Amino acid sequence: MQSFPAVDPIPLPAPIWLIKLLHIVTLALHFVAVEMLLGGLLIAVVLSLFRNSPQSQVTARAVAKRLTVVMTFVINLGVPPLLFAQVLYGRALYTSSVLIGVYWISIIAVLTLTYWLLYQFTARLEAGKSAWWVGLSAWLLSGYIARMLSTNMTLMLRPEVWRDMYSSSAMGLYLPPTDPTLTPRWLLMMAGGLFIGGLWLVYLAGRSTFTADEKSFVAGLGGKLAAAFGIVYLAAGIWAARVQPDAVKAGLSTHPLYHFASFAGYGWMVLVVVAILAAAFAGFGKIGANWLGWVAATLALLIELTLVIFRDAVRDLSLLVKGFDVWDRTVVTNWGVVGLFLVLFVGGLGVVGWLISVVARAQKPMEGAVL
Ligand code: HEM
Image (cartoon, rainbow, N blue to C red; front, top):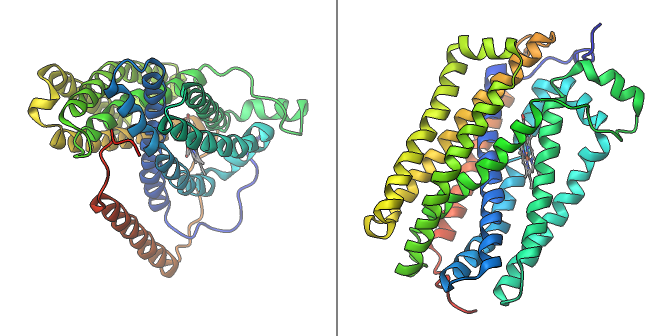
């Protein structure tokens, strides 16, 4: 029985490879921002809870005040991949979104509340008040959003459960039946938070707004966290790959790009972990965290990029087994519109780059300064 809704008779206005490329690049950027939020927030919460040194308080404040900005990137970099995913996988993604409609739509309200809590967290830290419970609430809500996104992204791959779910409730009231791939997939993203969050601290340690003592605290903490959670991230990635159905695993090991993506993703990670570990034990303050921070940032982006390709492969292979071939669409390219889009896209990136450079050049107070 055909479970997927009929394909939209309007052809795609751009080549599938181009939409896929844009989807992968923008989703990797979304993931970097998501991981910074999930990891940075938890780090700031723990530091603000224990308050065992002036450096830990300065670090908690420095990370917290950047999280509201990170959240804007999470949201704005989430919109493009959502649009591209809907174009390519709409028949599966719309169906799964409707089936868990109440939970899916709840993301908007939860996201708004999380954003507000982030501002409260920062304000309370700045005022020297107890703030960890506010930050922890924001982190738990972010974890809920992540869980719902993982739930939807796995439900879209399971047309066999759609009919029963819809029969149980047409109101989107129920979550899907258990799926062995869901929890490893979600935990992979959650573990990535402390890995990327650690790398973010290594990057931050290069800022001139920290004193020498603070720099070595921030870099040392970040390096150790990245090293430890790099291994957890790696283990979660292997777990998430191993629970895939046999047909998906077979496709992953035979297709050259997918094979490369999984190897490169994990390979890069191991390299970063080893490098960061070595640097952490050598003492970041002495070797200068500035260049190391840039290396960490570049590798973080490459790691997320390769993992997004790997994840994309899991989706395409899972759907193919169920009779949905993402490449099987009528394409009538409107090159004028594609050209205009690309010009605006590159222009938009240029404007964002310029904004970041203005912020980078602005004179900033020391992180430890009491405002
Ligand atoms: C606190 C806020 C957010 C968190 C923690 C978060 C986290 C995540 C996570 C964990 C995934 C991976 C799910 C999986 O495949 O297992 C994901 C995917 C995704 N997120 Fe976000 N997200 C957030 C906000 C947003 C927003 C506001 C948007 C859009 C406006 C968005 C768009 C997407 C899309 C489109 C995907 C999957 C795309 C695909 O598979 O093709 N996210 N997000």
